[in-house]
Image 1 (cartoon, rainbow, N blue to C red):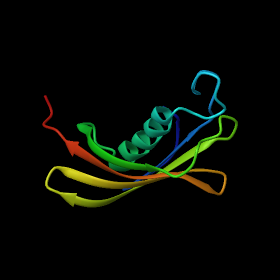
Image 2: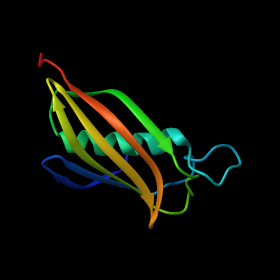
Image 3: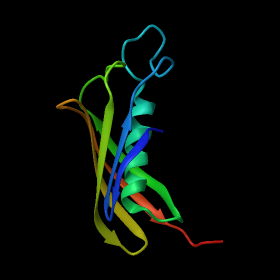
Image 4: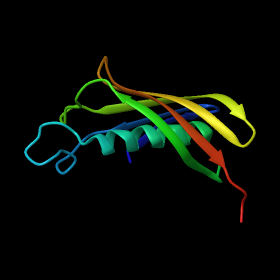
Length: 111
């Protein structure tokens, strides 16, 4: 979910322009699951491995997310332990942070 706008070794950036249907019923705020998915996408770009799967995530939502401003998620792969990569992800709208999280990505065996 979202458009990849940057991918470098250990770094990923995704932008999403919210649209109708991404808010809760009668709400002006984007559903948290959508925000999480943007962050997950950025984490996967930072790892950039064909066999990567999301294993775990700990995310803290800082404030409600408006449905009329682009969501930007930036991810930095920080630590490699065996077949796992730990990725720090932050999300923002304009200059305001909306979430931050630690994502664990596991590299699986190729089939």
